[in-house]
Image (cartoon, rainbow, N blue to C red):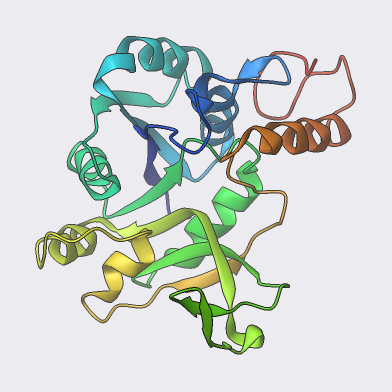
Amino acid sequence: MSLTVDAVIVAAGASTRFGLDKLAAELAGRPVLAWTLAAYEAAASIDRVIVVSAPERRGWVTELALRWAPTKCLAVVEGGARRRESVEAGLRASRCRYVAIADGARPLTSPEQIDACVAAAEGEPGAVLAIPVTDSIKEVADGRIAGHPDRSRLWAAQTPQVVLRQAWLDAAARGDGDETDDAAMLARLGLECVVVEGSPENLKVTRPADLEIAALILRRRFVPGSLSRVGTAPVA
């Protein structure tokens, strides 16, 4: 039997770089978060969906989750000031051995990508969607280049990141510091995740210009006026 997991969708950030609540921003006729929820609703490998919300928008997030993940929404829980606190709140609402942790602001993740990442995690500490870096990356300190990493070994991490739930909690208990992603949290225990190649289209909405790019991708992905693969509303 294929592995099935719970998904924790982190939607508790402050959107400081975006300038407003990016999860509520309109993208092709829906809020950004609606696209993310619909993808996890459609993924065969996802059993239940747990959404982590900022306290002040929990009511709105709950309404959205019940609309766009109607058969899988288990709970909407309140997150914390830091990412690790929000992820932990979501993990504690789950009892699955593995959990898929996702950014609420990745509206272009496909159900196929989710399923591939979950399948790759089975028997491993975890699995992470990522893409090879194409730019030359520089390490910078005090405004000067301090290192020239080998680009052939560099990948940009995306979500979902599927991890052993208890391993993440054990790793977090080792120290109060935050991590930028869940693979880094597991690395505290010496556990390294496998990599599943994602797509450059699986972008994280961080700045207003990202919405324009995402809208163009959606218009190319779906025929205008038709039903999308991940939901019931036509793409505008």
